[in-house]
Amino acid sequence: MTAIPFQLMKSRPKKSDNSPIASGDPVLGAARGVLAELRDATRSLVEAAPTPVGRAADLHRALDVDAPLGWQIFRIAIASDPLSTLPFVPRAGSMQRVLRQARERGWDEGVVRKVAQAYEHFNDFVTRTSGSRGNFDALVAGFENEASGQIRMSYRAAAFRANARVWGIRARTDYRAVIFQQGSKPGSEHLSLVHGRVDLQSSRPNAVLALRRGVIYDMGGAPVDNLGKTRTLEEFCSKPCPRLETLKGTDGESEVLRLDLLEAGTPATFFGCQIYPDWDGGDPQTCWGVKALSTVPAEVLLIDFLVPRAWIDPRTARVSVHGNLADMHSVYVDSETFTIPAKEQVRALGSDLQALHTPDVPRCPELVGKMLASLNWTAKDFEILRCRVRYPILHSLTWPIVSAPQ
Image 1: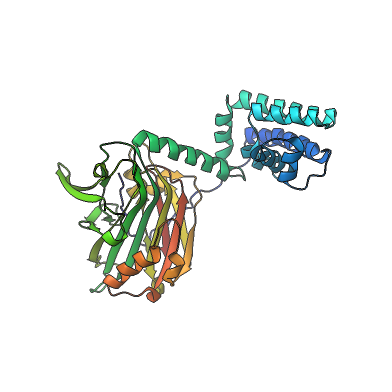
Image 2: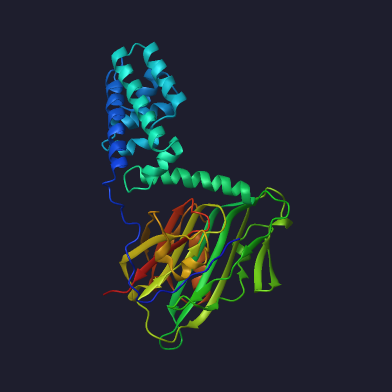
């Protein structure tokens, strides 16, 4: 399963990622108009309520519908951008229930009829342009607008659930932490990698989870070396600790977690580390980054990387996401050709390990602190950067990066 490769970045110009698509598309403009009609009609419906409505809870009580449906209708009514209403437009059965409840509870028939007509216009437009609501949502999400993020996240959550069932494995958190430090030779660096899976579950009786060793790449995209064998950090693993085995194959050695030896359905947590001393005796680096490939269905991908404070300008931190369905490993070499429109963020957390506290990874400050202590490094010398991705896209590559000061 999980590949944990990363690539060190030198001073190569990085193209703009996730750039907005031009918004002049005629279909998108027509969609905005149809949704504006539905928004305005829904706003009139809320304003015509027999009792005052100041929030979503008031509306769901006035209509006597369930709270989520009342919240959807309220969100449509208060939206400023018509396109942002799309994630909240109910399916046909739910909208018919709203209209029926409004009529039964004394709403003005003319107001209710306008909502019904606007909703019919919306459905006709969806059918004419896309064939189905799912296709229409995907069409609108393909443009950068206020609705895009929420639509994409709902797709990613659904993909996580489906992939977890298909592959028979899932994790609450896929964790990577990379520490960069000055090497013992001029121009070289020491690297250490901590990787883990929190609450890893298998629904297959023969589950074996493959772990690819961390890999260092040169500027041409060629692998320089791997980080060697994984050392299990047993004090941070669940008990009993998942067993790590090394298998020899035609392509060399691989490491696997033997989840089939654990009790069925029991969540397991595994952490391991790898170290590579004195890498790169060439040109000084001007960028540091982590290329993390998602190969296990996970609710969260969490990437921490620690770089000496004197090396970087935290304001340059950014992240992009990449994927190639034909060859997922090609994104290490040619990432920018295969950019996925997924907007993620990198945050600079400072130098206090306590800033690493997160429910995603229990004892995270202690975990990273132990690694630093084993290498005789102290946190005060580092800037801690974090990228948190909800429902990472399976087989996509997340690439957070930070640059040296200009």
